[in-house]
Amino acid sequence: MQVRHVLLLLAALACGEGRAADPQAKPGAYDPALAAQAGGDENGMRQYVLVILRTGPTRVPDGEARKAMFAGHFANMERLSKAGKLVLAGPFGDKDVDWRGLFVFAVADIEEAKALVATDPVIIQGEMVAEYHSWYGSAATVLLPGLHGRIVRSP
Figure 1: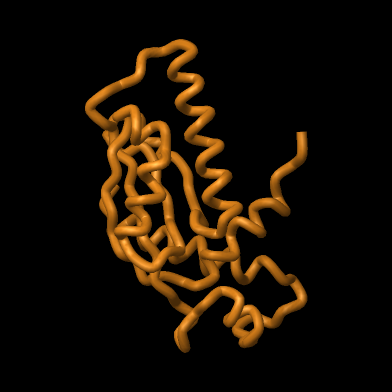
Figure 2: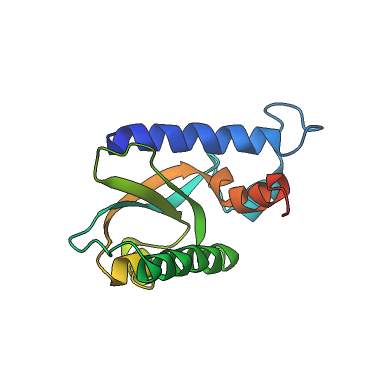
């Protein structure tokens, strides 16, 4: 999968999720309060940093250390999401390529994203490496964590 395809997918997802959030809103009805909350410009867009996680040089062997590493990875993503930095994350389904997953950060620049990614156990242990790209996408993307929480069934 090319970065261009990922960006198109993210744009479609963000726009679709924004429309589904309020069933009472008329399609295309401008909501200035929501636009301000999302930090969008006059086009309803904003800057993000897209991070592609790829297979790294050091695979952590199966067992307790690997389980602990991934538990830390998920905890780190939750922490960054709650802090309002990580707005979208998930794995790729292709098992035969080295693309493992992606992050979308609502941060000022790539350097800030690098500092956040450096806190992740999969990066620290070399299981994955990160590739960084500036992305100008729908400001509605920042609303995804709140929407996601509304569709996850509690255990």
